[in-house]
Image (cartoon, rainbow, N blue to C red; front, top):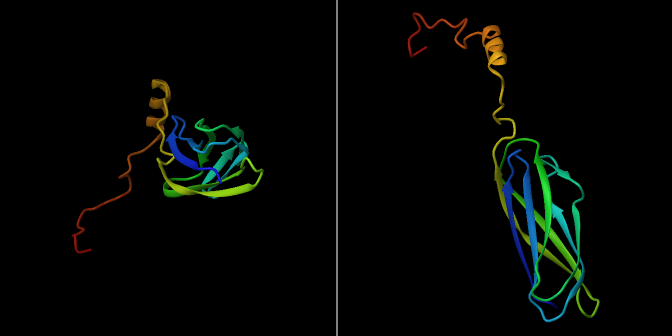
Length: 145
């Protein structure tokens, strides 16, 4: 069996999407073929752009190849693990499957992103709004209550 190394990482993009990368490195003496990376993620927390299977083809010795996936968070994501499975054929055409060690992903809540607005729009919203304390009266209320 070839000596395969799997590295994984991610970055949070400016639009709050997550770019998740899985690098497959062939440390063996022979090329590996039909390399596929299958992403394992929570469907309730992320929406995946494109396919969850990335085909990397043939990987010669000491030449890394990286599968890249773009995930859109559907809610706030903290301490969520993303995994993957790597399938390939060795130089004897035997099929192998490796489970990648999961990577913990953290990203900010996609709904708390700043939004640029024009001054006139801000003034309109400000004049239509009301202070948060409107309707609340704390007179004669003691801390015990």
